[in-house]
Every structure is written in structure tokens, then in C-alpha cells.
Amino acid sequence: MRHLKNNRKFGRNSSHRKALFRNMASSLLQYEKITTTLTKAKELRGIIDRTITLGKKGDLPSRRRALGYIRTKGVVHKLFSDLAERYKDRAGGYTRIYKLGNRAGDNAPMAQIELVDRDLSAAPKRRVRRLVAEEDQS
Image (cartoon, rainbow, N blue to C red; front, side):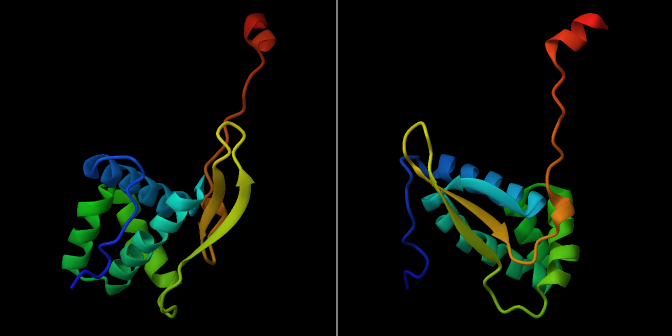
């Protein structure tokens, strides 16, 4: 059976595509919200749903499969503890996609993908930029 075999290619070879979605999946699980193109967000949705389902199982083979894909122990720990507890009663549909309009450079349709019922404290910390004048005074 050819279930879940019809995916988008994105003009990349298979190893580049796999690395792209590994990085995007780990970023989404870590920060719980990322901005990307619409087609990448739609493709990432299925990967995240399957990964969170592994976290909800909670057994050792599921943890090893998740570590084989995510590769960041802290993110996998968050998946199996926080996210599995948060989505234990939900039967799928863990992500939400908002369309943001088109990107200024190449007019690509942009979207924001986030986890449903996300934790607002998981957002990345913004660095405060110093003015060049302040650095010169020091």
C-alpha cells in the first residue's frame, strides 16, 4: 500500500528534504510556533502529528523512534513529558496554520504554524540590540 507516500519535493533531494523537516519539526516542538512558507507548513503538519502521537504512546520504542528523527534530547523530553500530557485527550489535529500573506522578496505565500493550546512562555527570547553609539561610549 502506498499510504502517506505522496509528498512534495520542494526542489531538493531526499536527504536535504529530510534534514529540512527534521530541523523544522524540532523548532516547532521547541518554540511551539514558527513562520515558514505555506506549502512547507502543510507538509510539516503531518510530520508533527505523527511525532506527537509517538510522544503520547510514551513507551521506549516510541522514544527511540522520536530520537531517531528529532535528534535533540531536550526537545524529545519535552515531547514525551509536557506535550504528551497536554494532548492526552486530543485525538489528532495538534497544529494550526495561519496564512500571513506573501513574502516581499519572491512573493511566496507565507504561513505561521503553531501547536494548538501552545505555551506562550516557550517563545524564543529576543535579543536586545545595542546601538553602535552605546558600544563606542563603553
